[in-house]
Amino acid sequence: MERTVLITGASSGFGKAATLLFQSKGWNVVATMRTPEKEQELNAMDNILLTRLDVLDRESIHTAIAAGIEAFGSIDAVVNNAGYGLMGVFESATAEQIQHQFEVNVFGMMRVVQEILPHFRERGKGTIVNVSSFGGIVGLPFGSLYNSSKFAVEGFSEALSHELLPFNIGVKIIEPGGVHTNFRNGLEIITNPVTSYDPVMASFFKRYPEPTKELTNATASDVAQTSADNRCGSGIGYAQP
Image (cartoon, rainbow, N blue to C red; front, side, top):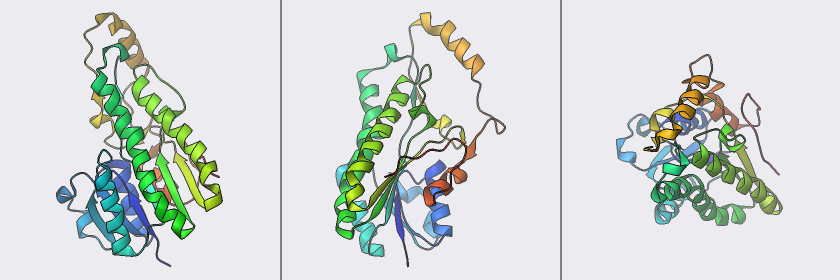
């Protein structure tokens, strides 16, 4: 029996690894991203539908889900992967930066869940996979905004798992630690004019250097594997009914 998964943020990193993994396991994949016209590798593969989805744009979410259902008949699972990290001194963050971090990492994820739930309820089954982070369990200096957004993902997912249990809809959290993706290259750094923090930052980054291959807990494909089955691994956790 064919199964279909919709993945947000499928253009790179974990999202792309998950797309390739699900496709290799025989799933149909609705691979969504903000600019699908730029993606060449996935566009050339069978059983993959590339379509636009911006988690800030509810209409694009609705349209992407409808396109997936039209192409494959139904959707069995959603992987909420789209997100980014905002790092730096909280005192120096602008109101716009704070709002945007939560708009993407929390409210965007919630929009996707709201849009897919009617389809899952109608079918009497479905799985929601929310990509959180080790940073959703432990807060680190200069990660207050990213950490708090992922803490929100954790609380939302755990509560939702109980809420959806009567409908046979499962909720899973993936909590990767260090992962070999381009996530760090995509970090937004808060400009900090308050030099009083400089010694604290220097001390922190001296103790927590750039992750190397040896320090990495899992590759993107390892984490993607976890979203496709119930295998547990290092740095990965669940919140399920």
